[in-house]
Image 1 (cartoon, rainbow, N blue to C red):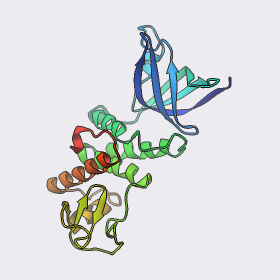
Image 2 (cartoon, rainbow, N blue to C red):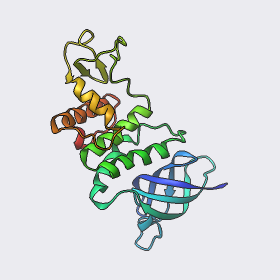
Image 3 (cartoon, rainbow, N blue to C red):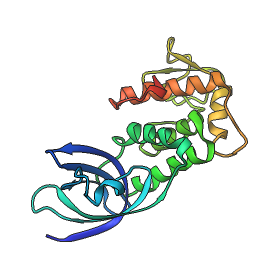
Image 4 (tube, helix red, strand yellow):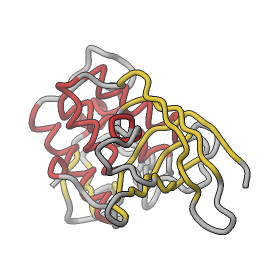
Length: 224
């Protein structure tokens, strides 16, 4: 069985038996992988302190003959977020981890970029930016200034219904999305000085929540 190594980001840990963990990682070269960390729940296990989310990790593992590989060693490097933003980072991971395919080698970089949004902006605004970035990358979003039903350019008010942004000709009910909000959502990724007011931020959070629910992804409290 071949041994592999890669840079990684821990997504979640699932208890297995009395002493082990099943760990899910995004890796730089191998995409999304799952590994068994045997004995990781024991007090003296070298894995206990190193298996932390929101850190850059370097992992070694042995591939399984037919199933899951086994984690052999792990090195923890720098933390990607400060302590004040750690909970937001965990919320981001919970909301986006199922968006990416197992073989997607770009997921690792995308998640780092999403976490950088939180590091740079902080607060719910940074969280919305990070999740939106991942939703856009995975093809869940269309253009903000065109109806996703008819394709017509729309510079007036629109409606968000389920997972679609629609003009008023294509939808009669839904969550109102103003042109001002759409311009701000577009500009916020281009300029660090752009910020959303509380009403627009609340609408953006609601849109993300509806979109994640439509794709049957567990939604954190931030988007409910």
